[in-house]
Image (cartoon, rainbow, N blue to C red):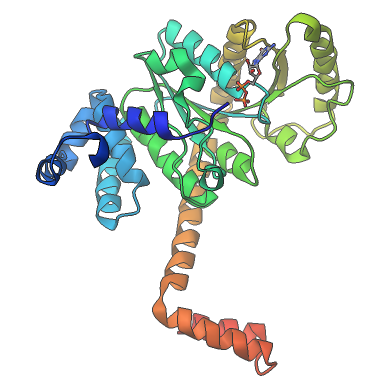
Length: 359
Ligand code: GDP
């Protein structure tokens, strides 16, 4: 499968009303400049987003993803203005190894949801796209039907970022999508490094897609992922694979009983589906409905969102302090000196750190 950003990028430009690069466009530099100047104001963007305008939503997300400080400030104002309109959604994280059928599942699940009147936004947390120059959602053709669906919005992972950066931008994008009226937010991750943990801490419901193996279902799964999962959905439960999928279900169910009860009061469920044949898709949605009922009764749903906000607040402070520290020219040169002193045995790492922090 070709994993390239190209088709996506041109679709993005279309969405945002941006003209293609100069080599493809007959526009002069002057007219490009003039078009850029016509970028809508913060107020107009907020108005557009809250009335469900996808072009404005895409433009605002581009500002969120930008590293330009002016854009960051504008993005911040837009998010603040959008906050009162956000929060009215269910946020679902989906993870699984490459090839398990994530995009096929999201295509089937997303289409099912728009079919029952939902508005679905699909985002991704994929820090690996920085390395591979492609994103898990980069090739929009992976979700052919959903891309064309007026009630769905698909946005790949911001590229060129660390996990922390991708995660923050995705969280802000969630707020914008909610303000634009999307009531179901799906966040896909391939689970590289810590990205599953990052996604888990920004969603209400965490779904692990699995394949049936030859009796070794529980091997090779990171223990932490099972603990995070609210549901394990065994995909490709079709054809010759159905029997193995059924026995995998039994095995996962047995294994889940060995885990301590979750704070949410919810016992994780195992379910079968065939994303390709679109079977078992509504069961997954019903399961999520049950989860929402349980967790709103126990107030866990809201408490969890509050805790997540607190976590992200502290995380943002930490990241900002760290990046400001290392960005400072004084620190850059002094750090070099201190490293040399430590290497020469003339100071200790702790004394060097104390000294740098006191600057
Ligand atoms: P991803 O890498 O996790 O996003 O996986 P994809 O959605 O790209 O699917 C990988 C391959 O598995 C593709 O060839 C799909 O057609 C196939 N596939 C996905 N879901 C199913 C399913 O339910 N049954 C079968 N038989 N094949 C599937």
